[in-house]
Length: 255
Image (cartoon, rainbow, N blue to C red; front, side, top):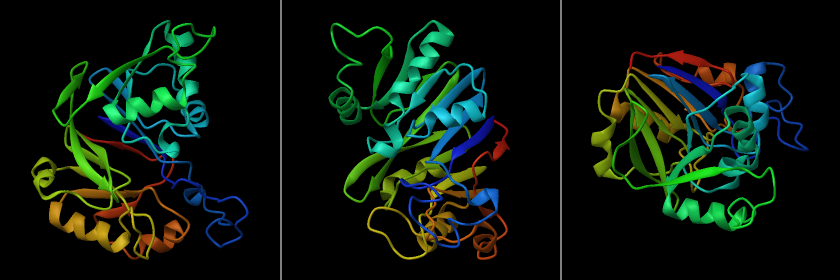
């Protein structure tokens, strides 16, 4: 299983518009963060998790020619604003693009992109096949995926376990009953927005607490804002098995 971090930044990315802080001005390429998204490749399947406003740039950067489907964690704009650019894969693959999401998220897509789902469609609009998720495991091809219920402040969102990797972005609380799904992980990818507490995201201390509870072999931090600090400086604060992820990082795992 190959895991590629397409983006590791928060909703405004890094550098942030009109900001002159040290992080936004950093020369370290690991401090340049597009909006958070992940690509998972295994068993002949290529899945994109979340398609935010940087989706087009992410696909071009990694020269992606085809995808098996898209998983959406929730409906916030930094996770769905690239929906229209999925039409490029309609043209390239001569097929629909499949999207898996909760019913609430699908309803939001239909409201925000009515032209995509109109009975009479404008030529060239995305051709999408929508699949409604609950919390039951499901398959894309031969790849089994287990949804994980998370809370993003008061909004229920989803994380996903794929093989021995779990991806938990935009989370401020994990319900107790979901920890059973997070046992025996090779890799945990987890939200760590900043140093100070935040109402709808784990801060660094909270993320590290969760990592200590789950005990993955390795953990990578994502959905990072400029308030967390420079990549090299954050790394010094972390235990040996924890690192901040960065855009373009690729991890290989046994499935």
